[in-house]
Length: 506
View 1 (cartoon, rainbow, N blue to C red):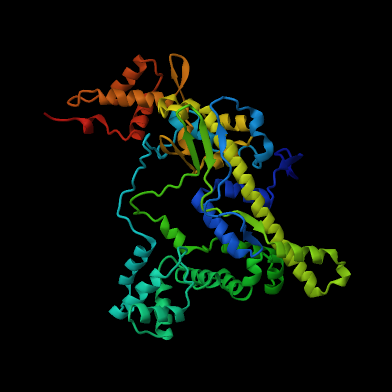
View 2 (tube, rainbow, N blue to C red; view 1 turned 135 degrees about the vertical axis):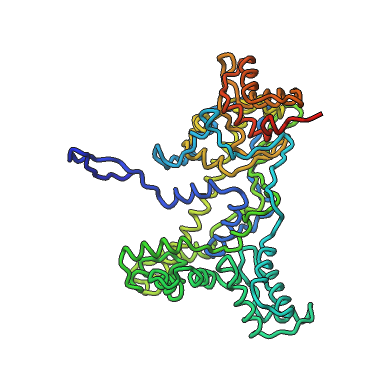
């Protein structure tokens, strides 16, 4: 917690406290918010960029999962069960908190994902187009012969999921001649690859991360601007230092001012190291691909088993060789080390510390997610036992935060973009956060209103369907204190059209 001085309108100096986040806290927060698929990609990038970080060989990385959290049916949870060991209370009040999203029925987001007890997920309108389909569509913008089209289509098929080409042109030439009887040359392949590198998104078809980033700068609309020229110089001359995060040496070598350094850092963060991944989320896919982050199973006797889905996340460790080398160098006195050895010591220490920090952040993420899901199971136990959504109790982010001892913003991060697979279907984690409604003076979940609303509409005379005003009055007669706009909102969430569109003519 850092202190800073400010002046009030009366000119009186006031000392305030400003919370400063450490790099480790930022890393933990970022990993916690990631869903499983994004986390798996981040782990893969970290393994490639830091050789000191390694996969553990004493476990099957494909089947690795955290131990189950078992609930034998006894409601024996307590606040102590959730302790502070997974706490990430790193944001000040008023920071990135979304508790207000669920404080009242009218505050529930209109675009909040919905699902049924069978786990049906809403489809997105449009035709399915993969990353490779979108690239092939762009071939029509260029004047190509049939021969060139065949080669370009093969190169597109050889790209990795991130959009980079990691196969040499020589290997591509051999594969085309042997398997497809297409004669070509390295010069022709280079020419056609250059055409691919003019496709969108910028950076696709690059043969290295450095080339990928440089292509993005070259294709930028303001590529001739001085800051872009500086950025190109950085990527061309100081790429290795950039990968190591050695901005102190970059500043010295490029003779940058603090302002220029900050601007370049901003420009670097705007570049995309995985241009192919951005196309995977393009509009037009027919169905959302859901990978559950939690698996909750209920047995016939009411026992509930919760498991954090870790499939695709390999167990990680720090290289024993690198740790040993670091230990040997640290045992020597600084005066005994050559300049080269001192630089090697600094470099090795940074790599080892970065690997340790990443492993620690993953472990803290695992503890936090497990603690949060256990609390949700406890608060919504009737649903997990029966699958009856009307049994969901009103629950806000603050309720889970109080039960776990975690910060409100931490619960928000965990619930964001996460899915849980249950015996009764797959649900977004936000689905379990339901605001309170009032029935005869008592608090009930809005699911009660939605279920009753569905029941009223199912039983209506389809030749004279019920208007929202009539539905509001009928719900009030049953004890629900709701407004007409709330009824309209719930009807929309249930994907029920207005009365005039429900009318059937005889």
